Image (cartoon, rainbow, N blue to C red; front, side, top):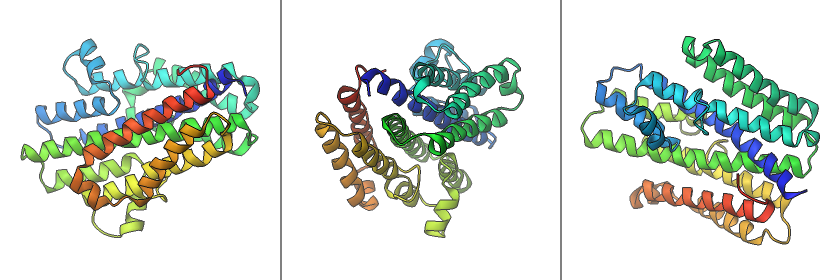
Length: 316
């Protein structure tokens, strides 16, 4: 496969996954704002949301202090924000159009119609009328696009590059989201602000944002605790959106695409996979969860650069 073609497919998948991840985290933060908050707590929640998608400086430069409606509009509907949901869906569609001949008709039409419907919904003020319904629609459309690709695409390089992009984006998202969330919780605890109900809601909201609440109770059958949340979302291979599951899937997909130039990427991915396999959450917590997550993010970013150097003409 031509490197530029691989680049389009890989980034098509990354942008779709990013749109879903943003929809998930915006939705759960909107729900958390329904709890009783003073103004400072609300601002802290909104700043944490912006940090989790690395957009706090960009938002501050454009809007100043965060407010719920402004933050949601910035993360969902702002076309000048390249990481907003609307921008991600537009970029996914543009990349898909560039390789339309390699996608099944159903795959292409799902992505194309998602973009068209997104524009129509935003023009009709669907976001303002019912943000939860709009964000659920985004998640369902990305689920549909992913399902159509799995159900209709030939298992060739195009399919595997789309999977590679999906899993790397997922790994980046879960590590980043957990890092920001745990730091936010620790800061709230240091300020003496959260009570038991608030703290419980923090942990359950993290699980809910990655569809992990039911899985948590199947695995632990007990109350929600910080260590168990971290263990499930970092180290459990049976949790589809855990860091370990994403890296496992990335490595298995990379094996389908390996070539004479991919040894470095395979080696680094395999090393990270092995370390996650043998990691112990108690040791991670004792040594510092932030340090572990920060290092994981750096390594996931490095893997993305290696994928670009190995298979593609340039990173997008």
